[in-house]
Length: 446
Length: 119
Image (cartoon, rainbow over all chains, first blue to last red; front, side, top):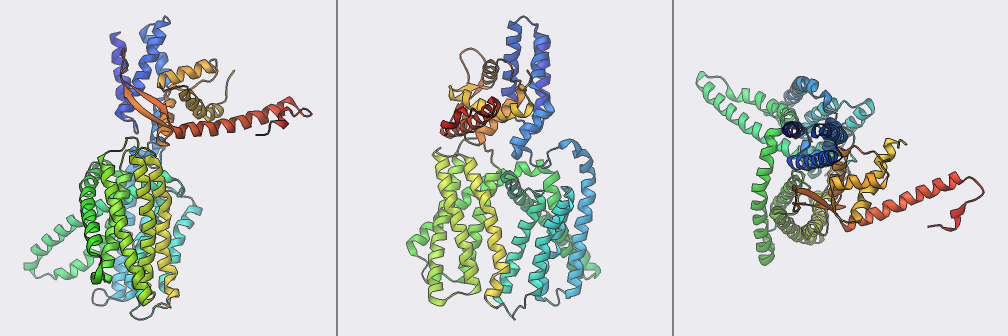
């Protein structure tokens, strides 16, 4: 009997290390194994024999772990391509690819800068195209990592080619509002375009879309960390070189832009390969900030509901509100993607609901005041873009609030809520693309 | 008789849902029930039942609860939800349609017995 216990312990330990299997799963499987052994022993087999047969019936542990991984992709989404066998080879070549694409992005933005004479001159074309000098490299990086075939490469490249045509061929007016909108919206459009190679062309899969949301959140965290470190490095370098009379500002022009561009790729690589680091941090950050934002939003909603917007509601405040609503949505989305879907609703879900409902109330008020403004002064590019964004947000928040409530009262599952968000994602991409492609001609590029 | 792997896989969801419709159960008991029901002809790899159960839980078809029976170890019980019942009814209609069509074809032409039993 002693030997069977140690054999079970060994089996258990092996299983516990398998990707995608957590402690509860191991408990459950062990219970199964023990049942089987007990029954075989009762039928006259020795414990050792029983163990052998039970293990055999349980099946190949690697195949089992893969099956678990497929089901709980959230637990090991870092191995997006699930045939983990070829992982070691790719891990070592990973940083070379990263380096190549990172340097390429850094060089591209530098060439553009020199051509534009930035920062002495600030031509609009540079601002319009800025994301086009960086994000295509990120898309290509993923297309390569996911080993996409030619058809998918073409599909990956086409949104970028289209965007390049649109922003450079449209006859922009001087001091044009639509141009300013394009400068703001294009990065968002292209980020969604990066999602396509990220999901390895399986953009219809809701699980992969959730992976992309998760990726976006963690990429952002890594990028901020790199930026902070880079800032400290730059400041120290400047302080050290200052006395020698070297023109620090000239160096900063080179390093800052290229560093910012290269970091886009490096952050993506870090998210993919150093997953475990951020995995522990990201849920903590959301846990920390979701309640804070919820309190702030609830307060704001109450205050504005009492006082009304009145005269204070100008364009600047409006864009602050839009930014706030987007941040809340990002927080909620990211929090959801980092959540273990199998647990039942807890207080964090309640707080999320508070945040969503407050955001919804604010959004309704913003919309009301915006429609009044449009009724009074007519459509402008800015108002149209803001109105559309708020409507897209309104529908999303309303759906999220409804499904969250149902989930909290246990009349629905988290799965439904996740589905709603992942189904809705293209809506944001679509609106951002509309602002880039349709709005300018609609307002005569003014 | 050997039953094809794909067929085993395809029938696993309705099997599990149907067994849970008889009452709550846990992994090992579900598997035993499958063996009894199929006279041992449906060979499942034991482990694969669990990823399947977890999928059903994610879809909201079953809920789970850890419980410790009076004698024995803590184990996870699975219970069918209303969504699960609906899914089972749907699966059942599909399987009945398939078996009916196959029966018709195997009985041969000339005697379409179920022509009146249009669902």
